[in-house]
Length: 285
Ligand code: DGL
Image (cartoon, rainbow, N blue to C red; front, side):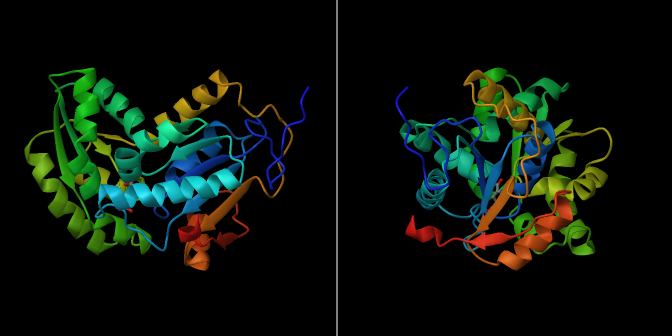
């Protein structure tokens, strides 16, 4: 057999033991990483949070696509075997374009979330809360109505949620007040399903659930994304066959700024202790 060239991390291209790359504009993608860790525990992950340039949600498609491509180039230097765009805004704006150019599997979080919502709704009224970019793209509406045409999809941009989460104000009267203002509109329309269409939002799920009440099902696309990732890797023969412990390097974290703040936050929501978060000058990629 021809000897495969190894990357600087020692993995060959399409090596099942190589890590999965996961990225977001900041800490939000950790809600997806957490679910991947739970559902496929013997995989290595390389997480990148673009903490210097968060938020993505109010930036143009061109800017978000440029940022996403830089991150994909960085992740490729780590020889990842697949990539998860753990950010709805980047999934909405950049996934299609990146997918065309990439030689490894890549998935986003929007399609999996849309599929679950279409399945769950009974009264065919689905709310989507997300960044301004994701709402403007109408991607959830298109996917959901592509599955079932008569489902009404009502989008609501909630631009203040991301800074509140990035500041760690997960259980706070300010978050409560803002969430009440944003969600009242959706409550009036009588939706029965609400998609948390931004990976930051599951971190304030209890507040959102309390305000919407028990009759509304909250959909967190992370669960379905991790399930689809597992299926995709299995289909490509890329699931890590290793059953032994993968050591302290199993999960590696990179950010573009504020490594200490990121580390503290990540340690508060992941049960696996994060040893370090390393800074990368992402604009060089
Ligand atoms: N967490 C991201 C999302 O799912 C982006 C939030 C932001 O950077 O605005 O859309």
